[in-house]
Image (cartoon, rainbow, N blue to C red):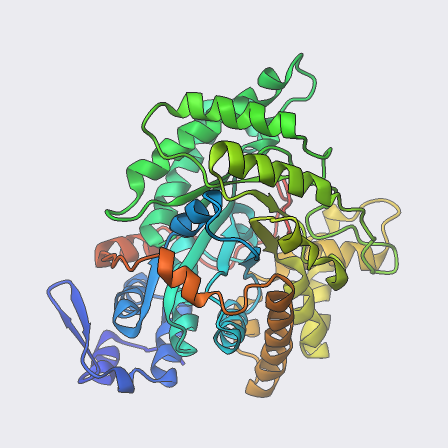
Length: 479
Protein backbone atom coordinates (compact mmCIF):
# COMPACT_ATOMS: atom_id res chain seq x y z
CA UNK A 1 0.00 0.00 0.00
CA UNK A 2 2.71 2.52 0.95
CA UNK A 3 5.03 4.16 -1.54
CA UNK A 4 8.25 2.17 -1.63
CA UNK A 5 10.66 4.83 -2.91
CA UNK A 6 10.86 8.58 -3.26
CA UNK A 7 10.95 8.15 -7.04
CA UNK A 8 7.72 6.16 -6.97
CA UNK A 9 6.10 8.86 -4.85
CA UNK A 10 7.33 11.58 -7.21
CA UNK A 11 6.03 9.78 -10.30
CA UNK A 12 2.61 9.25 -8.72
CA UNK A 13 2.05 12.86 -7.68
CA UNK A 14 3.42 14.34 -10.91
CA UNK A 15 0.82 16.69 -12.37
CA UNK A 16 -1.24 16.53 -9.17
CA UNK A 17 1.01 17.95 -6.46
CA UNK A 18 4.05 20.14 -7.06
CA UNK A 19 6.93 20.29 -4.58
CA UNK A 20 9.39 23.13 -5.06
CA UNK A 21 11.95 24.62 -2.66
CA UNK A 22 10.11 23.74 0.54
CA UNK A 23 6.63 24.52 -0.74
CA UNK A 24 3.78 22.24 -1.78
CA UNK A 25 1.08 23.21 -4.28
CA UNK A 26 -1.93 21.25 -5.47
CA UNK A 27 -2.03 21.47 -9.25
CA UNK A 28 -5.22 19.48 -9.75
CA UNK A 29 -7.51 19.17 -6.69
CA UNK A 30 -9.81 16.79 -8.59
CA UNK A 31 -6.93 14.30 -8.85
CA UNK A 32 -6.22 14.24 -5.11
CA UNK A 33 -7.92 10.87 -4.98
CA UNK A 34 -8.75 8.47 -2.20
CA UNK A 35 -6.11 6.03 -3.41
CA UNK A 36 -3.43 8.74 -3.28
CA UNK A 37 -4.36 9.73 0.28
CA UNK A 38 -4.48 6.06 1.33
CA UNK A 39 -0.97 5.49 0.01
CA UNK A 40 0.38 8.69 1.56
CA UNK A 41 -1.01 7.91 5.01
CA UNK A 42 0.23 4.32 4.99
CA UNK A 43 3.67 5.62 4.02
CA UNK A 44 3.45 8.21 6.81
CA UNK A 45 2.75 5.49 9.37
CA UNK A 46 4.43 2.27 8.27
CA UNK A 47 7.38 2.98 5.98
CA UNK A 48 10.60 1.67 7.49
CA UNK A 49 12.58 4.73 6.36
CA UNK A 50 12.16 7.84 8.48
CA UNK A 51 12.66 10.15 5.50
CA UNK A 52 9.76 8.56 3.63
CA UNK A 53 7.50 8.81 6.69
CA UNK A 54 8.47 12.44 7.22
CA UNK A 55 7.95 13.45 3.58
CA UNK A 56 4.54 11.75 3.42
CA UNK A 57 3.39 13.50 6.61
CA UNK A 58 4.64 16.83 5.33
CA UNK A 59 2.80 16.49 2.03
CA UNK A 60 -0.45 15.58 3.81
CA UNK A 61 -0.30 18.60 6.10
CA UNK A 62 0.83 21.01 3.39
CA UNK A 63 -1.89 20.12 0.88
CA UNK A 64 -4.67 20.31 3.48
CA UNK A 65 -5.17 24.12 3.28
CA UNK A 66 -5.49 23.99 -0.50
CA UNK A 67 -8.18 21.33 -0.08
CA UNK A 68 -10.17 23.45 2.36
CA UNK A 69 -8.83 22.12 5.67
CA UNK A 70 -6.83 24.16 8.17
CA UNK A 71 -5.45 22.93 11.48
CA UNK A 72 -6.87 25.31 14.04
CA UNK A 73 -7.42 26.32 17.65
CA UNK A 74 -10.93 26.24 19.08
CA UNK A 75 -10.00 29.22 21.31
CA UNK A 76 -12.10 31.80 19.37
CA UNK A 77 -15.22 29.66 19.77
CA UNK A 78 -14.56 29.17 23.48
CA UNK A 79 -13.99 32.91 23.89
CA UNK A 80 -17.42 33.44 22.32
CA UNK A 81 -18.93 30.89 24.69
CA UNK A 82 -17.32 32.74 27.60
CA UNK A 83 -18.94 35.97 26.38
CA UNK A 84 -22.33 34.26 26.14
CA UNK A 85 -22.49 34.64 22.36
CA UNK A 86 -22.57 30.89 21.66
CA UNK A 87 -24.50 28.27 23.61
CA UNK A 88 -26.70 25.21 23.16
CA UNK A 89 -24.16 22.48 22.45
CA UNK A 90 -21.30 20.56 24.06
CA UNK A 91 -18.16 20.00 21.99
CA UNK A 92 -17.18 16.29 21.75
CA UNK A 93 -13.45 15.58 22.01
CA UNK A 94 -12.83 12.09 20.62
CA UNK A 95 -9.73 10.08 21.44
CA UNK A 96 -8.86 8.07 18.33
CA UNK A 97 -6.87 4.99 19.31
CA UNK A 98 -7.42 1.78 17.35
CA UNK A 99 -7.52 1.83 13.54
CA UNK A 100 -6.94 5.56 13.73
CA UNK A 101 -7.33 6.27 10.01
CA UNK A 102 -10.54 4.28 9.56
CA UNK A 103 -11.95 5.52 12.88
CA UNK A 104 -11.29 9.15 12.01
CA UNK A 105 -12.75 8.64 8.54
CA UNK A 106 -15.95 7.37 10.17
CA UNK A 107 -16.06 10.46 12.37
CA UNK A 108 -15.61 12.81 9.41
CA UNK A 109 -18.33 11.02 7.43
CA UNK A 110 -20.72 11.56 10.33
CA UNK A 111 -19.57 15.17 10.67
CA UNK A 112 -20.17 15.84 6.97
CA UNK A 113 -23.60 14.25 7.06
CA UNK A 114 -24.68 16.30 10.09
CA UNK A 115 -22.76 19.49 9.21
CA UNK A 116 -20.72 19.24 12.40
CA UNK A 117 -17.85 21.67 12.84
CA UNK A 118 -17.65 21.61 16.64
CA UNK A 119 -15.66 18.41 17.17
CA UNK A 120 -12.12 17.79 18.43
CA UNK A 121 -9.87 14.81 17.73
CA UNK A 122 -7.38 14.13 20.47
CA UNK A 123 -4.82 11.78 21.95
CA UNK A 124 -3.49 11.64 25.49
CA UNK A 125 0.13 11.45 26.53
CA UNK A 126 -0.42 7.91 27.82
CA UNK A 127 -2.25 6.84 24.65
CA UNK A 128 0.67 7.94 22.49
CA UNK A 129 2.70 5.22 24.17
CA UNK A 130 0.44 2.19 24.08
CA UNK A 131 -1.04 2.96 20.65
CA UNK A 132 2.38 3.75 19.16
CA UNK A 133 1.26 7.12 17.76
CA UNK A 134 3.60 10.10 18.04
CA UNK A 135 2.16 13.63 17.76
CA UNK A 136 3.64 13.98 14.26
CA UNK A 137 2.11 10.72 13.08
CA UNK A 138 -1.25 11.36 14.73
CA UNK A 139 -1.66 14.82 13.20
CA UNK A 140 -0.86 13.44 9.75
CA UNK A 141 -3.30 10.53 10.11
CA UNK A 142 -6.18 12.73 11.30
CA UNK A 143 -5.51 15.25 8.53
CA UNK A 144 -5.37 12.47 5.95
CA UNK A 145 -8.70 11.10 7.17
CA UNK A 146 -10.26 14.55 6.81
CA UNK A 147 -8.84 14.83 3.27
CA UNK A 148 -10.08 11.34 2.38
CA UNK A 149 -13.65 12.20 3.40
CA UNK A 150 -13.54 15.71 1.89
CA UNK A 151 -14.15 17.36 5.24
CA UNK A 152 -13.59 21.12 5.07
CA UNK A 153 -13.13 23.94 7.54
CA UNK A 154 -11.20 24.16 10.82
CA UNK A 155 -9.72 20.87 12.05
CA UNK A 156 -9.11 20.76 15.80
CA UNK A 157 -6.39 18.36 17.00
CA UNK A 158 -5.82 18.27 20.74
CA UNK A 159 -3.21 16.98 23.14
CA UNK A 160 -5.28 15.37 25.89
CA UNK A 161 -4.02 14.83 29.44
CA UNK A 162 -0.50 16.18 29.06
CA UNK A 163 -0.16 14.94 32.56
CA UNK A 164 2.39 15.22 35.36
CA UNK A 165 3.22 11.98 37.13
CA UNK A 166 2.90 12.59 40.88
CA UNK A 167 5.52 10.04 41.93
CA UNK A 168 8.10 11.28 39.42
CA UNK A 169 7.29 14.90 40.32
CA UNK A 170 8.15 14.21 43.98
CA UNK A 171 11.40 12.55 42.96
CA UNK A 172 12.51 15.27 40.51
CA UNK A 173 10.00 18.03 39.79
CA UNK A 174 12.22 19.85 37.28
CA UNK A 175 12.81 16.73 35.21
CA UNK A 176 9.12 15.79 35.14
CA UNK A 177 8.01 19.27 34.09
CA UNK A 178 10.76 19.51 31.48
CA UNK A 179 9.46 16.33 29.88
CA UNK A 180 6.03 17.96 29.57
CA UNK A 181 7.58 21.11 28.12
CA UNK A 182 9.26 19.06 25.40
CA UNK A 183 6.05 17.14 24.67
CA UNK A 184 4.15 20.41 24.26
CA UNK A 185 6.75 21.72 21.81
CA UNK A 186 6.63 18.49 19.80
CA UNK A 187 2.84 18.51 19.70
CA UNK A 188 2.53 22.14 18.65
CA UNK A 189 5.16 21.63 15.94
CA UNK A 190 3.11 18.69 14.67
CA UNK A 191 -0.14 20.70 14.42
CA UNK A 192 -1.75 20.27 17.85
CA UNK A 193 -3.23 23.71 18.41
CA UNK A 194 -5.28 22.65 21.43
CA UNK A 195 -3.46 21.42 24.55
CA UNK A 196 -4.97 20.09 27.78
CA UNK A 197 -2.53 20.46 30.67
CA UNK A 198 -3.24 18.04 33.49
CA UNK A 199 -1.39 18.65 36.73
CA UNK A 200 -4.42 17.57 38.78
CA UNK A 201 -2.42 14.50 39.80
CA UNK A 202 -0.31 16.85 41.93
CA UNK A 203 -3.27 18.05 44.05
CA UNK A 204 -2.60 17.07 47.68
CA UNK A 205 -5.79 16.94 49.75
CA UNK A 206 -3.77 16.37 52.93
CA UNK A 207 -2.48 19.94 52.86
CA UNK A 208 -4.14 22.45 55.24
CA UNK A 209 -6.12 24.65 52.83
CA UNK A 210 -7.37 24.84 49.24
CA UNK A 211 -4.55 27.09 48.03
CA UNK A 212 -1.86 24.71 49.26
CA UNK A 213 -3.78 21.67 48.02
CA UNK A 214 -3.92 23.14 44.51
CA UNK A 215 -0.53 24.91 44.56
CA UNK A 216 1.50 22.45 42.49
CA UNK A 217 -1.43 22.14 40.11
CA UNK A 218 -1.79 25.83 39.32
CA UNK A 219 1.93 26.60 39.36
CA UNK A 220 2.78 23.79 36.92
CA UNK A 221 -0.28 24.72 34.85
CA UNK A 222 0.86 28.34 34.57
CA UNK A 223 4.43 27.30 33.73
CA UNK A 224 3.28 24.99 30.94
CA UNK A 225 0.83 27.56 29.60
CA UNK A 226 3.78 29.91 29.10
CA UNK A 227 5.51 27.17 27.08
CA UNK A 228 2.40 26.85 24.91
CA UNK A 229 2.31 30.59 24.29
CA UNK A 230 5.99 30.64 23.36
CA UNK A 231 5.48 27.75 20.93
CA UNK A 232 2.28 28.71 19.12
CA UNK A 233 2.48 29.77 15.47
CA UNK A 234 1.85 33.33 14.37
CA UNK A 235 -1.85 34.18 14.16
CA UNK A 236 -3.03 31.31 16.37
CA UNK A 237 -3.87 31.42 20.08
CA UNK A 238 -3.78 27.81 21.23
CA UNK A 239 -6.68 26.67 23.40
CA UNK A 240 -5.32 25.52 26.77
CA UNK A 241 -7.27 23.41 29.22
CA UNK A 242 -6.64 22.86 32.91
CA UNK A 243 -7.92 20.32 35.41
CA UNK A 244 -8.77 20.65 39.10
CA UNK A 245 -9.84 17.15 40.09
CA UNK A 246 -8.23 13.92 38.95
CA UNK A 247 -10.86 11.75 37.29
CA UNK A 248 -11.85 8.94 39.65
CA UNK A 249 -11.27 11.04 42.78
CA UNK A 250 -13.62 13.17 44.84
CA UNK A 251 -16.09 15.45 43.10
CA UNK A 252 -14.96 19.00 42.38
CA UNK A 253 -16.42 22.12 44.00
CA UNK A 254 -16.84 25.74 42.96
CA UNK A 255 -14.45 26.73 45.76
CA UNK A 256 -11.74 24.47 44.38
CA UNK A 257 -12.27 25.86 40.89
CA UNK A 258 -12.06 29.48 42.02
CA UNK A 259 -9.00 28.80 44.15
CA UNK A 260 -7.32 27.13 41.21
CA UNK A 261 -8.18 29.66 38.51
CA UNK A 262 -7.46 32.76 40.60
CA UNK A 263 -4.03 31.53 41.63
CA UNK A 264 -3.30 30.18 38.15
CA UNK A 265 -3.92 33.64 36.69
CA UNK A 266 -1.64 35.24 39.30
CA UNK A 267 1.11 32.69 38.55
CA UNK A 268 0.66 33.23 34.81
CA UNK A 269 1.15 36.96 35.14
CA UNK A 270 -0.55 40.01 33.62
CA UNK A 271 -1.08 40.27 29.88
CA UNK A 272 -0.91 36.52 29.28
CA UNK A 273 -3.76 34.59 27.66
CA UNK A 274 -4.85 31.91 30.08
CA UNK A 275 -6.90 28.75 29.71
CA UNK A 276 -10.23 28.43 27.95
CA UNK A 277 -11.80 25.62 30.01
CA UNK A 278 -11.30 23.50 33.14
CA UNK A 279 -11.89 19.77 33.56
CA UNK A 280 -13.66 18.70 36.74
CA UNK A 281 -14.51 15.47 38.52
CA UNK A 282 -18.20 14.58 38.60
CA UNK A 283 -18.26 10.92 39.63
CA UNK A 284 -16.98 9.16 36.51
CA UNK A 285 -13.79 7.15 36.01
CA UNK A 286 -11.64 6.76 32.90
CA UNK A 287 -12.83 3.81 30.83
CA UNK A 288 -15.53 2.89 33.31
CA UNK A 289 -15.32 0.21 36.00
CA UNK A 290 -15.54 -3.32 34.56
CA UNK A 291 -17.57 -5.89 36.48
CA UNK A 292 -16.57 -9.58 36.74
CA UNK A 293 -18.82 -10.44 33.76
CA UNK A 294 -17.19 -7.78 31.59
CA UNK A 295 -20.03 -5.26 31.76
CA UNK A 296 -19.37 -1.69 32.94
CA UNK A 297 -20.67 -0.56 36.32
CA UNK A 298 -23.25 2.21 36.42
CA UNK A 299 -22.07 5.51 37.83
CA UNK A 300 -23.85 8.36 39.53
CA UNK A 301 -22.79 11.49 37.69
CA UNK A 302 -23.33 14.83 39.42
CA UNK A 303 -24.52 17.21 36.71
CA UNK A 304 -24.82 19.97 39.30
CA UNK A 305 -21.00 20.10 39.47
CA UNK A 306 -20.83 20.74 35.73
CA UNK A 307 -23.63 23.29 35.74
CA UNK A 308 -22.47 25.37 38.71
CA UNK A 309 -18.77 25.42 37.80
CA UNK A 310 -19.54 26.15 34.14
CA UNK A 311 -21.71 29.11 35.18
CA UNK A 312 -19.03 30.60 37.42
CA UNK A 313 -16.31 29.90 34.82
CA UNK A 314 -18.20 31.83 32.16
CA UNK A 315 -19.67 34.69 34.16
CA UNK A 316 -16.68 35.53 36.37
CA UNK A 317 -13.67 34.44 34.31
CA UNK A 318 -14.78 34.40 30.67
CA UNK A 319 -14.00 30.70 30.19
CA UNK A 320 -16.15 28.43 28.03
CA UNK A 321 -17.10 26.28 31.00
CA UNK A 322 -16.38 22.93 32.59
CA UNK A 323 -15.16 19.79 30.80
CA UNK A 324 -16.39 16.24 31.43
CA UNK A 325 -13.90 13.37 31.18
CA UNK A 326 -14.52 9.62 31.30
CA UNK A 327 -17.90 9.79 29.57
CA UNK A 328 -17.90 7.45 26.58
CA UNK A 329 -19.17 4.46 28.56
CA UNK A 330 -22.06 6.39 30.13
CA UNK A 331 -25.63 5.43 29.12
CA UNK A 332 -26.74 7.23 25.96
CA UNK A 333 -29.84 8.57 27.69
CA UNK A 334 -27.60 10.86 29.79
CA UNK A 335 -25.87 12.69 26.97
CA UNK A 336 -28.58 15.28 26.37
CA UNK A 337 -27.87 16.58 29.87
CA UNK A 338 -24.46 17.95 28.91
CA UNK A 339 -25.77 20.69 26.59
CA UNK A 340 -28.56 21.39 29.08
CA UNK A 341 -26.01 22.07 31.84
CA UNK A 342 -23.88 24.12 29.42
CA UNK A 343 -20.93 21.78 29.73
CA UNK A 344 -18.31 23.15 27.32
CA UNK A 345 -16.59 19.93 26.24
CA UNK A 346 -16.85 16.19 26.78
CA UNK A 347 -14.11 13.60 26.26
CA UNK A 348 -14.95 10.25 24.66
CA UNK A 349 -12.63 7.32 24.02
CA UNK A 350 -13.10 3.84 25.44
CA UNK A 351 -16.48 3.09 23.87
CA UNK A 352 -15.04 3.45 20.37
CA UNK A 353 -12.15 1.14 21.26
CA UNK A 354 -14.72 -1.34 22.63
CA UNK A 355 -16.66 -1.17 19.38
CA UNK A 356 -13.56 -2.01 17.36
CA UNK A 357 -12.99 -5.08 19.54
CA UNK A 358 -16.65 -6.10 19.25
CA UNK A 359 -16.56 -5.84 15.46
CA UNK A 360 -13.11 -7.26 14.66
CA UNK A 361 -12.74 -10.81 13.27
CA UNK A 362 -12.78 -13.49 15.98
CA UNK A 363 -9.42 -14.95 14.96
CA UNK A 364 -7.64 -11.60 15.39
CA UNK A 365 -9.32 -10.98 18.75
CA UNK A 366 -8.23 -14.43 19.94
CA UNK A 367 -4.67 -13.70 18.81
CA UNK A 368 -4.67 -10.36 20.66
CA UNK A 369 -6.07 -11.86 23.85
CA UNK A 370 -3.49 -14.67 23.80
CA UNK A 371 -0.80 -12.01 23.45
CA UNK A 372 -2.16 -10.01 26.39
CA UNK A 373 -2.24 -13.02 28.70
CA UNK A 374 1.51 -13.29 28.15
CA UNK A 375 2.62 -9.68 27.71
CA UNK A 376 0.50 -8.21 30.52
CA UNK A 377 0.24 -11.17 32.90
CA UNK A 378 1.92 -9.21 35.71
CA UNK A 379 -0.98 -6.76 35.68
CA UNK A 380 -3.66 -9.33 36.48
CA UNK A 381 -4.90 -8.63 40.00
CA UNK A 382 -5.96 -11.16 42.60
CA UNK A 383 -9.66 -11.93 42.32
CA UNK A 384 -9.96 -10.30 38.91
CA UNK A 385 -11.96 -12.22 36.30
CA UNK A 386 -10.61 -12.81 32.80
CA UNK A 387 -13.19 -10.36 31.46
CA UNK A 388 -12.06 -7.62 33.85
CA UNK A 389 -8.39 -8.20 33.02
CA UNK A 390 -8.95 -8.13 29.26
CA UNK A 391 -11.17 -5.05 29.43
CA UNK A 392 -8.41 -3.10 31.18
CA UNK A 393 -5.45 -4.57 29.29
CA UNK A 394 -6.64 -4.69 25.70
CA UNK A 395 -5.85 -1.06 24.94
CA UNK A 396 -2.19 -2.13 25.17
CA UNK A 397 -2.51 -4.34 22.12
CA UNK A 398 -3.36 -1.41 19.86
CA UNK A 399 0.28 -0.44 19.25
CA UNK A 400 1.72 -3.94 18.80
CA UNK A 401 -1.15 -4.92 16.46
CA UNK A 402 -1.42 -1.60 14.64
CA UNK A 403 -0.41 -2.90 11.21
CA UNK A 404 -2.76 -5.89 11.48
CA UNK A 405 -5.66 -3.66 12.51
CA UNK A 406 -5.00 -1.21 9.68
CA UNK A 407 -4.62 -4.14 7.26
CA UNK A 408 -7.93 -5.87 7.96
CA UNK A 409 -9.88 -6.89 4.85
CA UNK A 410 -11.95 -4.11 3.29
CA UNK A 411 -15.21 -5.81 4.32
CA UNK A 412 -14.18 -5.83 8.00
CA UNK A 413 -12.98 -2.24 7.89
CA UNK A 414 -16.21 -1.12 6.27
CA UNK A 415 -18.30 -2.94 8.89
CA UNK A 416 -16.34 -1.39 11.76
CA UNK A 417 -16.39 2.03 10.11
CA UNK A 418 -20.15 1.90 9.61
CA UNK A 419 -20.77 1.02 13.27
CA UNK A 420 -18.51 3.85 14.41
CA UNK A 421 -20.11 6.34 12.01
CA UNK A 422 -23.57 5.51 13.35
CA UNK A 423 -22.41 5.97 16.95
CA UNK A 424 -20.72 9.27 16.15
CA UNK A 425 -23.91 10.54 14.49
CA UNK A 426 -25.97 9.56 17.51
CA UNK A 427 -23.60 11.30 19.90
CA UNK A 428 -23.45 14.41 17.72
CA UNK A 429 -27.24 14.54 17.90
CA UNK A 430 -27.33 14.09 21.68
CA UNK A 431 -24.68 16.79 22.16
CA UNK A 432 -26.50 19.19 19.78
CA UNK A 433 -23.49 19.84 17.53
CA UNK A 434 -25.35 19.15 14.31
CA UNK A 435 -25.28 22.17 11.99
CA UNK A 436 -22.47 23.74 14.02
CA UNK A 437 -20.15 24.21 11.03
CA UNK A 438 -21.41 27.70 10.27
CA UNK A 439 -20.92 28.97 13.82
CA UNK A 440 -17.43 27.44 13.89
CA UNK A 441 -16.46 29.16 10.66
CA UNK A 442 -17.92 32.44 11.92
CA UNK A 443 -15.55 32.58 14.88
CA UNK A 444 -12.56 30.45 13.83
CA UNK A 445 -10.92 32.19 10.90
CA UNK A 446 -8.52 30.50 8.53
CA UNK A 447 -4.86 30.83 9.42
CA UNK A 448 -2.52 28.88 7.14
CA UNK A 449 0.38 27.30 8.98
CA UNK A 450 3.43 26.14 7.05
CA UNK A 451 5.13 23.00 8.31
CA UNK A 452 8.86 22.41 7.85
CA UNK A 453 9.94 19.23 6.10
CA UNK A 454 13.05 18.97 8.29
CA UNK A 455 10.84 18.99 11.40
CA UNK A 456 8.68 16.16 10.08
CA UNK A 457 11.73 14.04 9.24
CA UNK A 458 13.33 14.82 12.61
CA UNK A 459 10.13 13.82 14.40
CA UNK A 460 10.06 10.53 12.50
CA UNK A 461 13.69 9.88 13.39
CA UNK A 462 12.92 10.42 17.09
CA UNK A 463 10.18 7.79 17.15
CA UNK A 464 10.84 4.44 18.89
CA UNK A 465 12.17 1.75 16.61
CA UNK A 466 9.98 -1.31 16.19
CA UNK A 467 6.80 -2.21 18.05
CA UNK A 468 6.69 -1.12 21.69
CA UNK A 469 6.07 -3.77 24.32
CA UNK A 470 3.21 -3.13 26.74
CA UNK A 471 4.16 -1.80 30.13
CA UNK A 472 2.30 -0.83 33.26
CA UNK A 473 0.87 2.67 33.07
CA UNK A 474 2.24 5.33 35.41
CA UNK A 475 -1.32 6.58 35.64
CA UNK A 476 -3.57 4.73 33.21
CA UNK A 477 -6.04 6.96 31.43
CA UNK A 478 -8.94 5.89 29.29
CA UNK A 479 -11.78 8.36 28.88
